[in-house]
Length: 611
Image 1: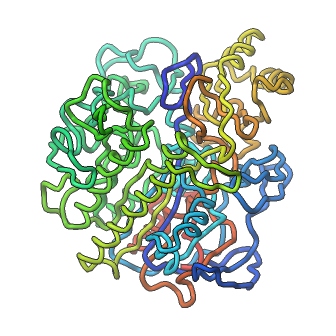
Image 2 (image 1 turned 90 degrees about the vertical axis):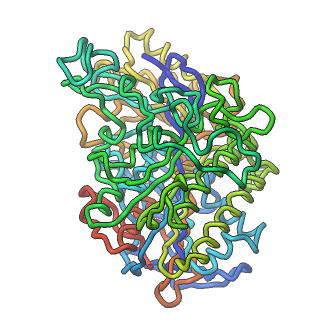
Image 3 (image 1 turned 120 degrees about the vertical axis):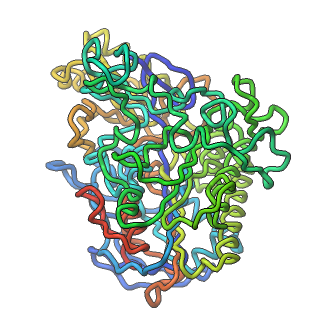
């Protein structure tokens, strides 16, 4: 058994990668109707946004489990949930919210994931920065304050919620570092693609920087990145890079888990649900995506070719210039600044993404080297908010931003402004929907996290002769046992020791209790541990003050803002307060560009209401 902690070295347990929040901004979308009674009470806020008030969220069900009341207000508010205080209602329900609307047709749609961006962060930012680009987008778009991700809120299930419209039921992806009972450990075959693996099936499937050819290189492979050599100004980056390291070519197949025929299983093959990029390409549309590491070839979809222009520089490369934090392709030995843990360096890293997206808007491939028509469906991830939350945080329970976090938010807002300006300069404003989102939230908001090592939990189980195959942890614990027949005994024992606060356990349940059961054989964990609010399972020496991956409201209640041309009358500048699922972004994006959502795997969520 191995245990991983996010962004850190292996412990004796397995790591859950950070999950991501969704903020969807489409240029000019409308208000939403709901399948629940919508109270037609409207008011106008001081930012000029019309508020439509309805039911705040769905009651939650877990099969035969009881329903739960849903808390409203701040993302850290405790919910009266059968699973415990603070647990997101979305963790107990995979259903989409609202009556699907007729989405206005445009030529192109952009999705931007501002990882970590809570719903309450958006509200707070609009309040403190009323003249911001986000405020302008909200004033002409639709905000969804009760948008929830399906759990777990790790980056992989989060981005798949956005790009497949599904959850773990269809994708089979519980985390970026999870377990598959039918696959084999890397290295089990003498020759890839030949023979049969040695040993027994059942292996950790860690789709992380460990799969890069060189984990210390910006491109995941030596000499590859967004530019050659150092950049002197974060806002003026050269983009003369070769194709090597792009479109997944930096993923080392030797490091991948193997199937029964000794074939390496890439992240896009590990996911079993079609993506929006596959559906778009099947309809004759062009596609592109930008994300935080080569393993985000995940978004290609099971056929491996959904994204035509995929740019995925490695955020965990420790390749930032020691003096400036700016990424440098010449630093390939790990001696540089870790871009994922430094407030300044992460802005420089995000600038690579922003510049690549601007290149695409201006009719070039992400590198800026080749002419290419602006894609019909494209977008990117940004990490500045998430890193700001983890290493600067908030100064009050109401979500007041620290100076470091506000600085990063202001950078993100300025980047959005440059994107909006580029669309205007290229006469694309009237034919582009902008979906700004995030694939996970972060918890706690305030005060800082209590860090507890997960190792004692695994040790305690081992003392009971309960054998753990993998224990993936962040602000959640996913346990795969070597023998699922021990699940009942493990559950009873963990509930017994949960009264000992040193373990940080709030609740332990079978995954079905939280709706976390996959139709993909061999993927579903045996048990789910929900830590006490504010607890993160990580090394106590870590400097992080929050994390994601779990089922708390601040993990899953993310910002969602849609702005697009030709919204329904009265929609522009409105707030739709009923529950919606972030999974609805997928079908919404396809609908914008006229692609049927039937190209997604059955079970996908319908478009967002009110567009």
